[in-house]
Amino acid sequence: MRPLLFMLFPLLGACQSFFAAQQPPAVGERMQGEVRREAGTLLLTTCLSTQEQTLSLQDQSDSGFNDDANALFADGATRLFVDIGGRKLGKASADAYPRLDVRQVYRIQNEGHGCDDPALRSLTLRASGNEPFWNIAISPRGLLLERPDQPPLALPYLEEQLPQGQLNFSSEANQQRLELWIAPQRCVDSASGAVSHLSAVLSIDGQRQNGCAYFGALRNQ
Image (cartoon, helix red, strand yellow):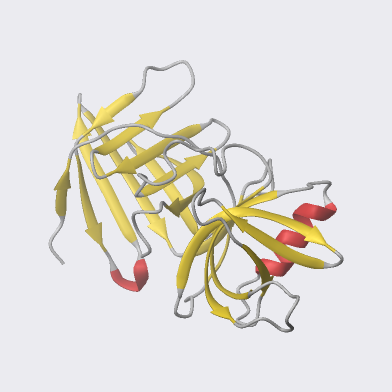
């Protein structure tokens, strides 16, 4: 497939450590919001301020959502931010909430920006890693690399789609070569426990650093 050429700009996140690749089922409707646990049920309140709704979440497709969410609640979280895809089901009873069968997990986190993230609607992809920290944000305007004690680096880049859902983003500027490899693998932040659906490897002049990634609201696959 032909590589696409883009330009650049900013955003933020954090992740690390990978797990087995998996091919998600049909995503259905994608939504972001806050999850709370009530009487043993996971309830999602969506981010949309005009059409905010509450849904009862269930996982009938082995997405791992229930296990990941309950693990974060067990660590002391009271609310989680989630970005998920699923299929709406009818109410189980007249006084129950509408149900959502979770089919795809993009992100589950218990800290950092959530519904208040100013970039929530404009992000194509975000990747980041720890030790040392790095963050790459990609939007239709381009790519921005952020690292501690260094000025943000805005770069032109090439995107190439590879077999099995993998992606490669590459750039050469200021006598530096940057490559970002993305694979569809569940990824867990070793510090916060946040879960995302993509693993990432950043290579700068041959030095490789592992991390996690997720698609923003502007991209599903």
